[in-house]
Length: 368
Ligand SMILES: *Cc1c(COP(=O)(O)O)cnc(C)c1O
Image (cartoon, rainbow, N blue to C red; front, side, top):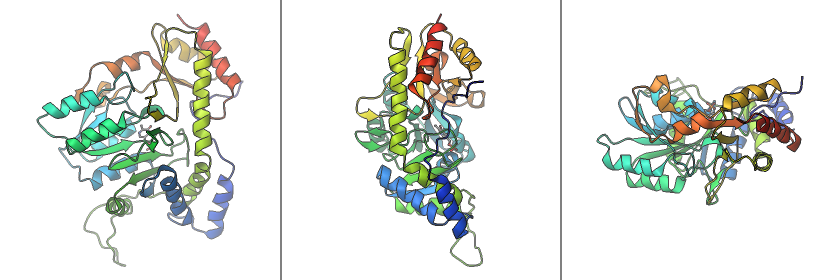
């Protein structure tokens, strides 16, 4: 059997084991230690954000953001409907109510128009927005950040998939009150599992650290006036993160190259459209995403599976999930249409042009 081509397989830089060995030599296996600091420093240096906190997952980082901002039971929190469930689970952890906003055609990400229209007419004012930069492509973030400031709602950017993506030269994740990156196994970089919370506000970073480490008051005997979580990242995993950060720009370049190969080898297929990239932005093209006007994409998924190539439908919008059947949603059919027609294709950075050409040939042979 041919080696499987995954959507986005882990891709080591070569220094990971060396750094893990250093961790073992120091015996700082347990949480904290030098590599946690170094990992936070490398994210700060790369994205330009002033405060970073390494945690156990992207989901944990989102939860900490909501907790620090004081989101609580009964609050409304706006969120992109076209996203992965990890974006919005933390809203439920806080007992708050998600209010989903649809995408627009220009970005496939949250529509600033729908957001503005809702903010002008809503009776209950939302406390925050969790905005996803889907598939590593920047949303119309300047406009969205401006609307959040104007209406006085907190902005949390879910940049779990978009490390390395920029808008007007500024990194996604650094426009809001908080930004979140994920280092789960399939993301552009991985620590096997992990996340990073970033913020321009040092006091918020300190508060997030407090909640992430069981809300210990500064006494030797363990004093508690609030409850917290065990969300900190281990030094062993941070060592992997430091090695991965050394190749972030290479990975972005390769993901973008893979996208260009798909575009080249599918360019004569009229019914295919690719996820757009806003003109002021640079996406990381984490997964190449496309839609078919006529062909049922399940035919393509099944055929690719026979040659051991992974592909998947686009994320099913949150407002269509049974879990959220009673949630408020401001939608106009855009993400529902994308979900009906769209597919993510194998985009691992270890792939060659020959791999992409073979996948494209298979797609072309199976069009309806
Ligand atoms: C992966 C992902 C998350 C969750 O990150 P974890 O590190 O897996 O908890 C959240 N939002 C989006 C959009 C994601 O893709």
